[in-house]
Structure formats: structure tokens, C-alpha cells
Image 1 (cartoon, rainbow, N blue to C red):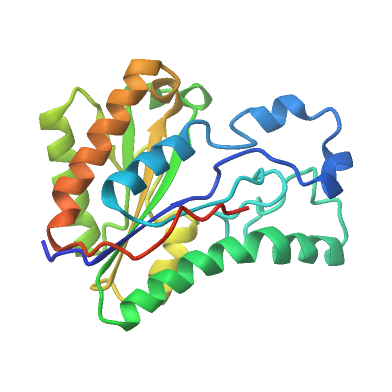
Image 2 (cartoon, one colour; image 1 turned 60 degrees about the vertical axis):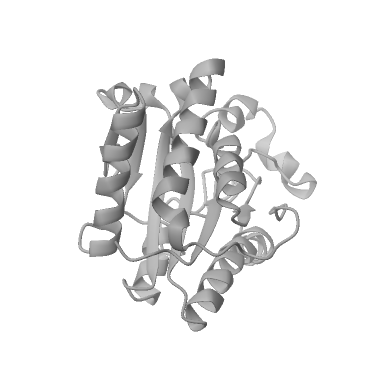
Length: 247
């Protein structure tokens, strides 16, 4: 597998914050905000662990995806939830300008700047899933999502899966519980960037594992250590300060 020069970590559903100006839209919606509909529980801690171990910049957005989903394309029917779909076009455009475009542009700009300098980039988009929402998903601790048509992503995920299975008790599956080619930020970037320069891997961690103290710590340690083993030999540390705060 060709070496990775640069690594970027992102977390699109890191929190369930509602900006004050939109608080009235979510009155009585506390349960929805705190549920998987509002955010990816445990994903931000996992993203931070990976970013620290890999010495990679982290871009995270803490605004609830019920305001706008930064992991969806502009044409996606769930870009806005029922709480914000009622807004007129001008108000929705303002939400996009304040909370959607800044996150996606930060990620895309950093990746494109590195590629323009000749670097090969690994983008890890960190998410979590609720195993209660579909039968059979509890049989997976971690999913590695990728585009099987891109050889670099396929090779990395096969090797990563084997490394995790050999070094831990984690149940790791590829393109599960979702398909790697589904609508998302990594899919968007694949359309713009050559397969030889950009590898977009979406991580889906089981929330039931992330919520258990020692189990969650083991998962974070195993994932970070295996990522370092696979990616760091050619990786050049990105010059940076503290992690960007995101939105």
C-alpha cells in the first residue's frame, strides 16, 4: 500500500447544540436532540483520540444535525429536518452559510491544499451508530466504510480490519452498517479528487460500545493504535496548533 503523507480527521455530528437564534424551533424537542437523530454519541471523543495519536488536525461541528446535516449533500432530502424544513428559502440559506458551508469548506480546502502539494491524503470521517435502530447491527462494533471501486481505500480497509481483528476482540466489518458509497462528505470529496491522492474512510462505531467506560476506552485505544500502525510510516505531521473548534 502506498504511504500516506497527510491525515485529516473530521466529525460531522459531534454535538447537539442549538444556536440561540433558532432555539424557538426546538422547544419541546429535547429528547430528539439528545437522541441519535440529534448527534452521534461518542463520536467526538473517538475523533479526538484518533487526531491525537495520528498528530492530525480535527474539524468538528457541534451544531445538531437537526438544524442542518453537514454530512449530507445540498440535494439530499434530509439535509434539513422537520424542525427547519418549515423555514423559508432565505432562512435556510442563512443556516447553510453559517453552519454548513464553513465546515465542509474547511475540510475540503485542507485536503485540496495538501493534494496540490503532491501529498497523498487519508481523511477519516468519524461517526457512530445506534444499534437499536435496525436488527443485526449490534453484531458489529466498528464499521469501515469506503468505496470498493477505489483500490487504495479497499486495500487500507482490508488491512485495517485484519489488524483490528488480530489485536483486539472488536467485531469489525467493512461497509457495514451502511454503504461506503452512500451520500456523505467523503463521497462528495471522492467525486472531486483522484483516487490515487484521496482516501476517504468513514468510521461507524457502535454507540453501545462507546457508552461503556472500559469498553469504550479499549475501542478508542485499539482503533488509534491500529491506525497509527497502518498510516504513520509515510505520514508527515501537519503543522498546527490546538484542534479547531468547529461550530
